[in-house]
Length: 336
Ligand code: AQP
Image (cartoon, rainbow, N blue to C red; front, side, top):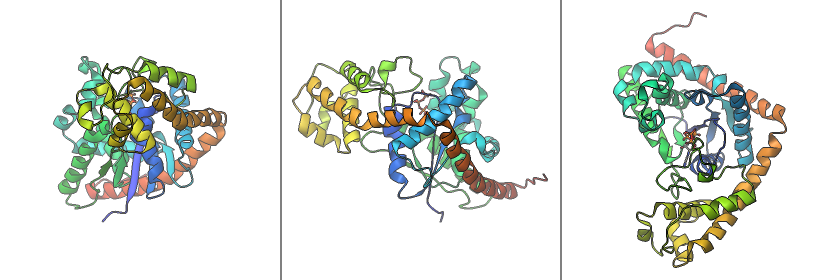
């Protein structure tokens, strides 16, 4: 039996949005009172695509500011950046030798991010899931809150843990992690195209609500969000194949922590303009205070760096101990 421990990470690639918040960060906040939680800014994942060094530095601080502004308590949780704890990269190398190339080739995120020019993608982008497995398992984490887009990577983490435990006959050494995926909205979709996920790297800023957007921008983006010509249905079946409509309804449900059918009870038969103004109100109510707090926190970079410094020390102790056990299991010795 493993001690219950939560681990999750967010890439410091700028523009944290409503998808990151509802899919992951909101859940991080809820979990901090129930589990020991380790939350990581996964800067090594960010460099699988080229990053401007100065922008990367400021995005790391902005991500930590977003964590704190969303309600994470740096005393209660271990909050740190991945590059500060070398054990992540060391275990990732070991997992590069455990995982199979066929497993990597099946990852849909690689296919989507590498696009048509697969040969030109970084090797890091291909083996990204091994580093993610190392991030989680170096803490022997048992629960991982993520959006639905990360489900396949978590299945791979489970496969790596099982293969390692089996290959080295150390039954139950690594836990078989449980994904914690939000129920009402597991994947927030783009405001411009209900079949694409809301994403930081999407060119159009109109496709997402950023945590730092002000009230006017939020109102304007929601007003312009794509819908269809039909009114809001009264039952869930009526949302079938209406991707944009389903997305807006689910965002409202998730923000207000009510089930989708309750939203449909309230708005069924009404047109989208009535609903959109209510949705705007909810987004502004939940997101604007976070945006304002992010701006405030970003004025105190010393404070933000001190959170990372402190969290990195605490994370390093756990990760280094676990890595030591891994080295012993596989027959490696560190003489330095
Ligand atoms: N649209 C989304 N809906 C629900 N959850 C989402 N997450 C991301 N987008 C959505 C969840 O947020 C956490 C952190 O994600 P990340 O920033 O580390 O990486 P990502 O999934 O690649 O996010 P983006 O916005 O799509 O970034 P880019 O455009 O840079 O690739 C994860 O738990 C993720 O599930």
